[in-house]
Length: 226
Ligand SMILES: [Zn+2]
Image (cartoon, rainbow, N blue to C red):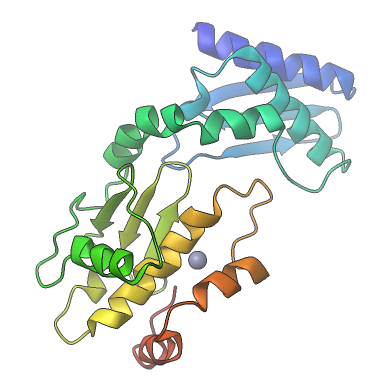
């Protein structure tokens, strides 16, 4: 396939620059946007999210370069500027979000739960001025009642999912709103190529939720985690 050839070419060129003898790279249909690799001294094998299969060559070259720099310890983490620009372009989300939703087997793909509505929670948050309406955002309940992590957010693909365990009448609205707000804070802060998630800036934004303490107490009592 042409896309795979382009990828191999980009990684082979970067590998050569950093003195790797054998470099393999292929696109893989991961659900999330990610890259995995294995390496030995002079050999490296990359599995790259196929969400990048239509990316232009400079984006793939930038990705390869940044990964080799990480591998040899020249940089700790992060992606190239070209890559960040490509994946945060609105068109990336527009084209890949449907694929992500198809691959997310654990999502109902609906904001309407049996007892509670994520759309209603979202509207309440918009009403308080904490968040602004984002037409590209998709909200979904999960099919499983996950408790170890009640909320998830794909920043790049703009999908927030909330565990079905919160779709219950006993859960006060403000607890659900808080969980949704937590995930939306990730979205608002945007794609962080270093992978940092709950830093100081995040905590500051999260603390704007008026009933944060009470909501946290509720979650702790129910042994639920964000
Ligand atoms: Zn979080």
